[in-house]
Image (cartoon, rainbow, N blue to C red; front, side):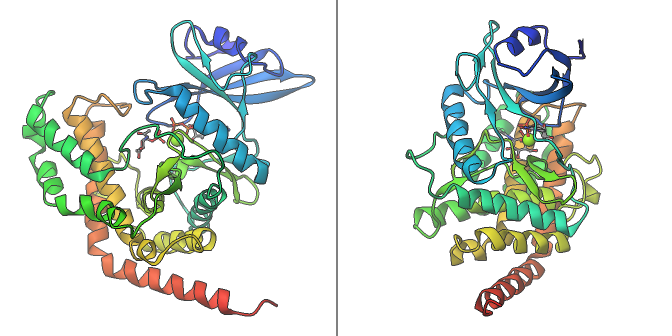
Length: 374
Ligand code: ADP
Ligand code: GN1
Ligand code: MG
């Protein structure tokens, strides 16, 4: 068995689950910022079978049983309608997760075969399909039985709270970095009014809380290797009550953006209008019947808000000494904050064009639904 760079107790953890055979190899996998993901290949009969092990970050997800209860409910609901959707493998004891001797929480998923994730969108078709898939995911969960899901991270997309957290981090300046990021702090402070827009609409009842994914990064949807269609929506830790605009906004942030979230040259970051159009069309195709007029009117703003909020979070983490998002180099979170703020600026500059795109997509959709079936 070759086990590269997996935790020392990996074999013990694996033994808690009813794998199809002995482990042939295991290695770190994926590019997430929060959990640790490992791929394991096991011998199964004359062939092999693959699994995805995840060590859940319980410093961030403080109530893992509540989180896993959400995931068990959501995967059961979605798999009834999508056979390739993410499937949890229960422990030998029938539990949804395993607590190791070291006190870490582990869960196991079947590997979604014949599909892949992308870190960057390179075609309009990918953007359209990702948005259609996340919209469909939301539609599948509209009638989730069993009451409200648990809030796995309270106030996760509460942009006002994220803004106040940045303000506190500037005052506390624990890592002594505030003086060197004055321009970024000023950029954020100048946009305080944006933080309340959706929260005010929610308070007035013009927006409705729904079951949403809340982390609709482009690498959280697996696309079929042959057809390019969605095979599975993944990364379900934050599936909980939220706003559909948060889901759409995070797609804009990651799928209608011109460069990687952590490009050290923020000058390369701008909104990509053809991908934005594809996202709007894909999302309206699957979630259009669920969305109200206020949601439709804020699709462009949602992209700006999520880029802003994520920038606030990266800048806060930089000021706090990189305690939340995993970093791979010095100033990694600062680079991330800068690209997000560059995207905010670009969306502001393109607001009118984005409004037109939404209006045209709605016109097309109305035309399509008004057209008699052939
Ligand atoms: P994180 O929360 O750290 O982003 P994810 O659940 O998104 O973790 O997993 C990280 C990466 O691992 C994904 O982008 C995807 O490429 C891969 N992955 C996760 N789950 C599966 C799965 N069930 N089958 C195949 N690949 C997966
Ligand atoms: C984190 O886990 P991952 O990498 O999919 C974060 C998201 C951020 C994203 C920024 C639980 O997502 O909220 O938007 O990084 N997840 C959590 O890349 O905080
Ligand atoms: Mg992920």
